Amino acid sequence: MMLSNAETLRYSRHLLLSNVGETGQLKLKQAKVLIMGMGGLGAPASMYLAAAGVGQLVLADFDELDVSNLQRQISYDASQVGQHKVDAAKARLTGLNNEIRIRGIKKKMDAKQLAMEVSMADLVLDCTDNLASRHLISQVCCQAKTPLIVGAGIRLEGQLMMFDFSQPDSACYHCLFPSTQEQTLNCSNSGVLGPIVGTIGSLQALEAIKYLVGLPSGIKNQLKLFDGLTLNWQSFSISRDPACPVCSVHE
Amino acid sequence: MNKITININGQAQQLAPQTSVTDLLTTLGHAEQGMALAVNQSIISRSEWPDHYLQQGDEVSLFQAIAGG
Ligand SMILES: [Zn+2]
Image (cartoon, rainbow over all chains, first blue to last red; front, top):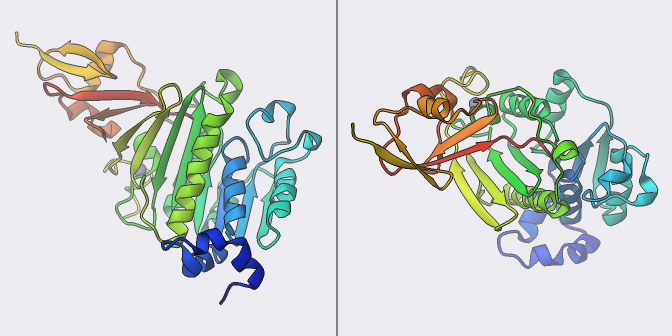
């Protein structure tokens, strides 16, 4: 496979990078990424991945665009309020890059459907807004051995981590946060500054591109905490919990 | 009895020797739900909390899962 002339022009800034180049660009073109959640994280993450030429994007979200989303979900337009987010996002991303394929899933997936979608993806981005989805996505990715990049943001704080389930030693989301009890902290009741989710969503895209072109991750089995007040980052290593019911049972 | 000093989210705290992570959270009155805890930048798995004893000078970080996005 080769890049077309149009692609060579479009991705010229990638082709200049020694650690991407034509080989890396072709890997991006052949990649399929599933983005779970098209809110404040999924909006910038999907735009960067579409712009970068990831060949297939699957966008999953069952919400419709609300006017209160526009404060941070920057891929949407005021005229799209009331539309399904995945339809609005698809229009935006197709306008950005019509060389890639974009599919939307606008109904809530059960575990079985999610497992099917995850097994067809090379990489999953967790951009959701609730703990139940986060646990389910991690569990399904772990079973399918599909790498997962998790982002989260609230108030002025962000969290970022990657679990490379293609590796046998990977920890999982449950190892870190075993409680499935829904937390009260979400964007609807606690508030969030747009650039917090913008920062974390952009870094999810960065890590996704790095993973797809074969560069080592800076966050594998690590949790990064971002403090939007001081702009300080903290890093913690995550080890697999030998007692984890999710990642340590099916050895 | 001797005490040890640790740091919790940057605040110094005195503890009895042989204090486990579980003991610490009980002392602090923290609900365990949704919390993660790291000692010296390594996450301590929930299953290890009862048997992980804190040492003089440990840097303890305690934080909550963030669900928002
Ligand atoms: Zn686990």
